[in-house]
Image (cartoon, rainbow, N blue to C red; front, side):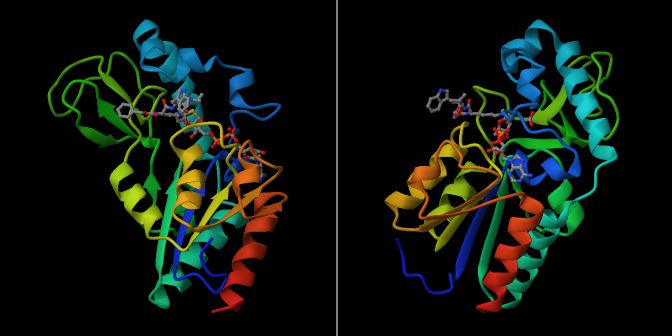
Amino acid sequence: MRSASVPRSLFLLTGAGVSAESGLGTFRDKEGLWTRYSLEDVASLDGYRRNPTLVLDFYNKRRANLQGAKPNAAHGALARLEKVWREHGRDFILCTQNIDDLHEQAGSQNVLHMHGELTKARCDDCGQLTAYDGDLSIELGCGACGRIGGMRPHVVWFGEAPLEMERIHDALANADLFVAIGTSGAVYPAAGFVMEANAAGISTMEINLQPSDNAAMFDTAQYGPASETVPAWVEALLAEL
Ligand code: BJW
């Protein structure tokens, strides 16, 4: 672990728990999405090929939910942390597994969405990305190449390569503190970031409702609802600047 003084360079990883209090479901909690849907059906390329309408509907419902959702105090605190941190000339990376845009709505800049973005569609054929806030269907055509039926959500399913990985690995290697917030530690490569940080001697901290699958690998932890724990941690950190 590097020195316990105020870190210069922060790397934050967020997961579904940070958006839970904004009314967006998590995946693996008691009432999570994977208790109602099979992840093989709705979060894999094979599932999409078998039944594209089922998968598009799953994401259409989540896109509709997002339209009524507002950032909570955790998103707000992370946006404030980024602003102040950068004003002090320090490095700040916010990497999220979430496909919602609540970090951006709260004012976060340059969010790395490693599992994609719900508000974008992508043509399976030519790869063209389009901002999209309506429902996707198999009747839709691509505005760039004209192919009908290939417009899919711009999200990363199991077996697909997560996005921005080069930037993420570089930023993590240069961090002084890695903080994982609201993630179960069940999905790789994100679940492996704490191991990478440990191997590089970077300090690590978990903020979650309860201990995650990887809890034993973190140097420190704070447990409770993100809307309370995250603002409290941010204020304590900023007070040290
Ligand atoms: C609160 C709270 C509150 C609740 N306050 N906290 C064995 C070893 C290593 C890897 C593998 C392996 N077998 C297979 C793999 C690879 C696979 C994988 O990890 N599988 C696991 C099942 C083991 N990974 C992949 O396939 C990834 N790709 C990959 O590895 O590519 C390699 C490659 C390279 C190059 C070319 C080709 C391939 C892709 C993973 C894609 C994940 N996709 C999903 C769905 C898409 C997006 C979406 O629909 O939203 O992403 S799955 C789902 O899980 C979603 C999430 O982003 C992701 C993580 O979930 P998260 O955020 O942690 O949510 P939960 O619900 O699990 O946890 C919430 C937490 O919050 C809990 O702890 C709560 O307690 C807490 N909480 N309320 C604070 N108020």
